[in-house]
Image 1 (cartoon, one colour):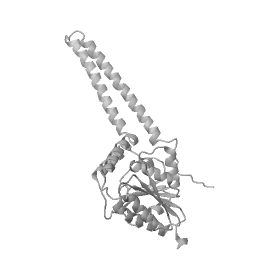
Image 2 (cartoon, rainbow, N blue to C red; image 1 turned 120 degrees about the vertical axis):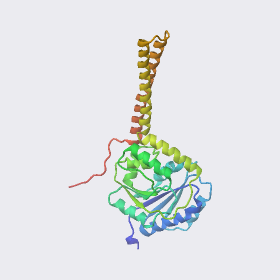
Image 3 (cartoon, rainbow, N blue to C red; image 1 turned 60 degrees about the vertical axis):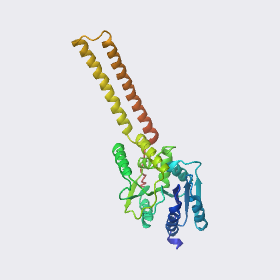
Length: 311
């Protein structure tokens, strides 16, 4: 009955790239859950330049609906899941926004409403995550990322998530460009919760362009959102500075205790001091760049979790 349905408007944003084999089942599943539980909702499919029949599948699905709005956002060229989902989020108008980074029906139907109701308890971002990541590369990345980032919210493989409108606005106010949404979400200062589930049947394979995109995103995320790049660069610069200092001391010892070739001592001292200065400058530049990255991507002037009006 209509009176028993949720009054909040929900937007479902789905990333699509060459998923024609599984897309119809996924759309039917999501639409059924939303139709049974919400008075008003929309489905936004972000087509990241699919070369198969994914767009036709979406069009055929939309013809069978009367109660919901279905939109297809066509990307100009293949841009990967992060930029494509950012475009879809900009188009969404819901009080709550569901993000589906991939076409996957491996979660139980009741989980979607479970994360929605959890968000009503005061959590602005609620994610659904499998108990264990399917790929060992994903597990390795998140282990390295979480250890290097040391943030309040630990990242992990997720299937989908829901964001309140406040979370969407907060993230947009933090940075104009969002290279890795999960990292920005973890640092937005709002209440976050993850619900785990036991995956059902898994379908689909990762396309070559998706593998390359994920590798690039993993590397960029480690540089932008963790101290790993700064730590490694600083360590190497420090080691080279110590090596230059050791060479300078060794040159002085040879000059005092032996008879080096004329001009050798002066040359070696000059080179050791020059290299020491160069790597000291590198250390300063590395620190400066890390501060800039911190300000642009991970910091904001202040982060408020919520306001409680007592009177």
